[in-house]
Length: 295
Length: 287
Image (cartoon, rainbow over all chains, first blue to last red):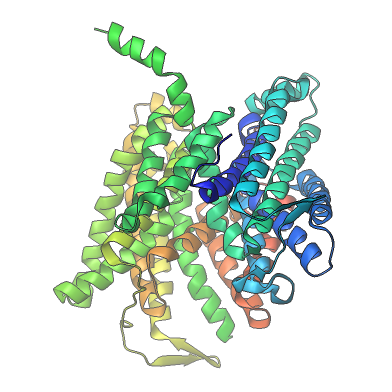
């Protein structure tokens, strides 16, 4: 795989793709709206960063420790929060996002506060150190491929079918013997794991991490990326991530119009392409046929 | 006591946002996250009209209110209605997120990235009540909330339109079968919430700074307040907003601002866990 010149852009896109793939497990497959991915990104990033920077752990071990902590937290949160439905769950996870940003900002002694945590080392696995754009690009690419493979297998597995049943009608699923609470928690843990790993890689790549990188705005934009690109697919999230990351690249002259353009794109796509961009593209043959045969 | 006053002031703004959101939700099941953006838009409009056209205060306020009412109706017609007809609730929520984003974007294009404020309506002296210094502007904010609540009560309980609105809110499908134009009811609810956003924006702007990036906190806090009070419960929305404002202020006394918000929201999440449909929400037996 050749490394394009925009390797830096692709590394960031890859990190977000990982997080959004995780979100898709929760939102696309299980139908639970969650704004909580940034919480686990923060755990992965600050956890991995702090353990390797201040406690001297090897970076790979620190990332794994952060992942373990994320899983534990996800289990605890899942058991309590996933009892809520619909907007109330969205609100609780929004609360998580606000709390995450708030704690990252105010626990200055631990996280470096608003100015962030500096001096995080690059990731080292065995003899390999991922210091530059190229190596991180390959790392992220491998992780994304692994995540895609995992997600695809999940969709086609019994667990995937259980999640789909819960997404369609939780009560009916329960009557058919699917335990919604257990499966929802599993989905939550899985999405947390994706986010934690992505967060760790993010921090190791930039050698820096700040509360803005896991703020409420980021939490919202993750959901936007998923909705825009199309959930329940592998390419949809990728499209969403790329689109949202590309808009700011448009250049200085249109920089002032970016939020407006992004908002309008979101409105238009969500209204006229409810299954997201990828869903719309997939339905193009049928839409064309309908347009041509209805006279 | 001083803390209470500050908390009530901010809480009143949250309450107005939450009230708009709750009203729209009760009629149409749509959560309009863009309410936060409209508050800031109203505030900046007031500043601009006063600055560029040199309008006297009363005319300025009246004009902003009129603009917001018409604008929200247009927004419903052009943006929300197609989305509601074509998609489900999740999609429409994302549309309102896009609307919030677009509003912020519009503010950036039209007003730039600097914050704005306005002179207080009655000058900068403060009243002294029970040992606290109350800026006169605070009374305007609280007065706006009272006006909004009373106005809404009158609309819903003393007019025919209000009766139709309440019926639609209770059972939209039944209302549709009875010949009610639900689209029009939704439009009215959007206009009314535009009125409230205008009230909130113009009364709070002399007390704070507003700019294109101050929309998110109002949207987030308004949403939290609306859900906390029980979605669709109008008194709940008011209570939710005031409680959230007070909690923020109380904790802000002892902790840093951000940490205070963290604690306040943590408490609210706990409340949600105990009462999953909000403080005053109906206990739902269906999903």
